[in-house]
Length: 330
Image 1 (cartoon, rainbow, N blue to C red):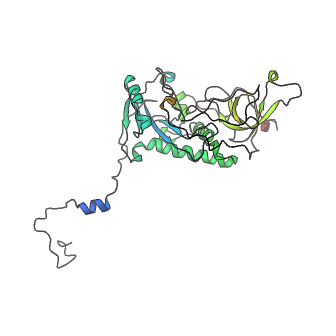
Image 2: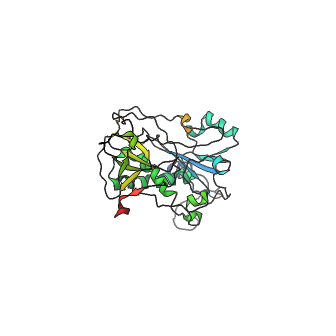
Image 3: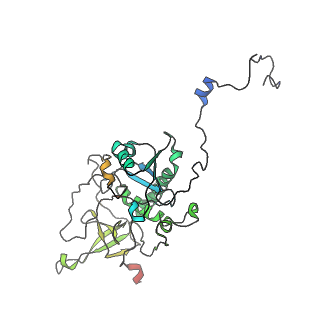
């Protein structure tokens, strides 16, 4: 300002040679440096680079005892599933995470080294460098929250809502992959949605003939909770038994919601992050939702449909072969 005459009666330092670093200015004004766009321009194949992040602890334990959600996103397809390299003939080469203990423990490092997987640890306190996983978690939580509120369900169903949100998101087109769906990129075919139903709606579960007496009701009332990972079936919350069961013989009423159920006790001891829950073996890299076994007061009756496994990963499910829908009969 002295040189340009903007002020007067001020003396510039005689040895001034240009801008210098001011300690007080740096300590009082320093901000985070901008992040360059498209820093990583390498083109990865499907499941070559996976982004990891954990959301939690949640404010309420889920019906299965979960407090944390581990989300894994494939860089190439945007797919959010727990998929093994063997399934698709692709070797996982890179894992990108924020350096959290659950991703960088010695047992996990040993696994990475044994399988030739390179870790890409993002900059501490810079969430943008792990932006793919961060954005994915925000998207899944947003969709899951909307599912819960639409169905008028309590927060204890957050895990089922989150997994259903992942299932839906994998079947939505994305501009990042030329407006294709992650499902199509992975499976090389367009996804079918004819089996999809409204989350949280009323569902009736068939009790097999062998498991009921002559005058017993043939169906039990429940709530639709999503899609089973391993089989062509649905996950339904059996209201009487107080647990999620897996069945393919379901009748849906997609216009009825608003059920009242008993919530899991918050007195249950908190879930702890256990690296053994990653379920890693020699031929499989499988990501899981961190959980402990939930204990409920109500017990299933003999002859119920198969009880659901606790959520053990980012889902992989397909259309049930047979499904009845009350709306289709009208």
